[in-house]
Length: 67
Image (cartoon, rainbow, N blue to C red; front, side, top):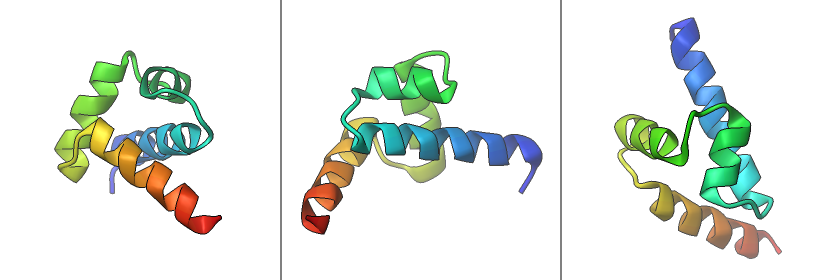
């Protein structure tokens, strides 16, 4: 994995963490270092093949399942 790929991966993981903690996709992606929620969504789709909204639903479901 290249250093730039590692940084992108870390930004995506930080965005996921912030979404789990109740932030919107826009707030979480900006806080994680993406220039916009659109940039996050495009990067996420390119790397994982899933839309940001699908990820958000899965993360919220996972959080509820842990309780």
